Image 1 (cartoon, one colour):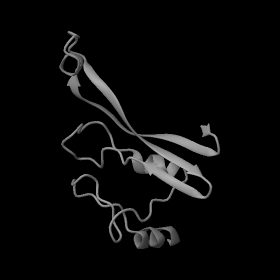
Image 2 (image 1 turned 180 degrees about the horizontal axis):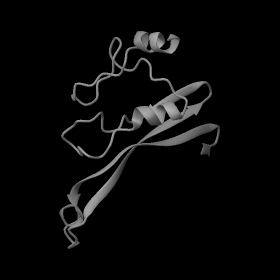
Image 3 (image 1 turned 180 degrees about the vertical axis):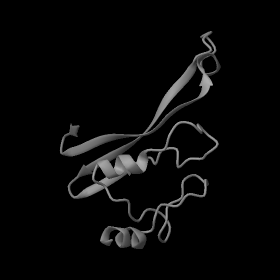
Image 4 (image 1 turned 135 degrees about the horizontal axis):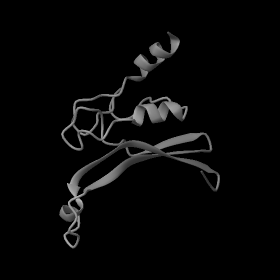
Length: 112
């Protein structure tokens, strides 16, 4: 979608549950799962690309273990190459031990 001069894309990383509706909202008596999407937002404009949020991280993980992990595929389908984020060459998801490929590794993969 366009917002002024910006292109804004909602990327779905995962969807899952960690509570029932009654656990999340005590006024409800439903034992149905409270299903939540976990999204990231990709904003492009004026030669800049910004990724807001990095989702839940890769599987396996303790939180929402069956929710999926689609952010990398969503970024690829949006034509975005993941490069340098935080630290010298890596970005780590919330201590789960996953590291994005380094920029050098991505360049090597792109050449192959």
